[in-house]
Amino acid sequence: MVGSLALVGSGEYLPAMTEFENSLVQDGVKNGKEARYIQIPTAAGRESNQSLAYWKELGHKQASAIGVQADYLPIYTREDAFNQEFVEAIANSALMYMSGGDPHHLAQVLSDTPVWEAIVENWKTGGSLAGCSAGAMVLSAHIPNFRLLKKTATSGLNLLPEIRVIPHFNKFFKWIPESAAKVLLHVPDNSILIGVDELTAIVKRSGDSDWVVIGEATVHVLKGLPDQQLHNGERITLSIL
Image 1 (cartoon, rainbow, N blue to C red):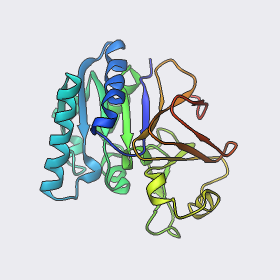
Image 2: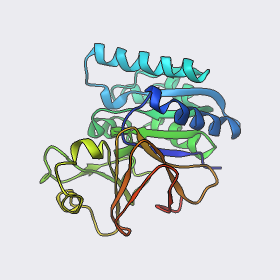
Image 3: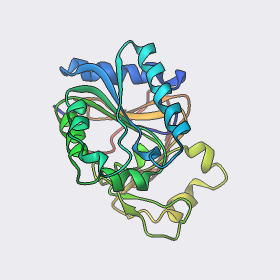
Image 4: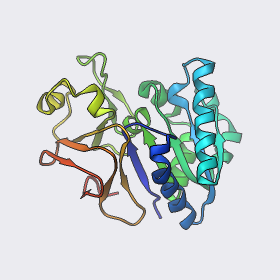
């Protein structure tokens, strides 16, 4: 029983995403998981203590609004990703949420570690997995370098090897034509490139063959399938998970 999987453009723990995040928790609960979610702030692990405290508090406020427990796991380094306490905390949680920051750091910390294995195992047995911004980008086989577009992409966590995600699409790519984005990012012909706008997500529910768009804005299909824009409630087949 594979759990729900969400790719979020931005907005983790914000009021606009409360209903959506609650739905991911409830998906996990329906699959027999405990009514709690795990905050995984690894992508922000090199930010200031003030920034990390902000994300922790924001996540806890969201948990309170939803009515569940939030467990903040300070997984900032590869050493942290081998911590057995964190592995045990992940097990049987209804939702695991990888929030934003640096996707390259996130991949470097989690790749081939017990924490990542625990995340995948819990997802494969019914827990929901969400990645916001960097957390969405890292699930691909490769992560583009937005700031150094000529630089070779780095390896991701490879959960969705055929899908590449551009988060914050309406903020950072509004100045560039969609047709140019797929060229600049050097996306292989066998990959699907999607742009996910802010406060918007695309989710594949447990047992569903399609992905569904949820949120205020748009998901842009840029390569690998016919170019199109999808809005709240619209469905598309992206992978065979």
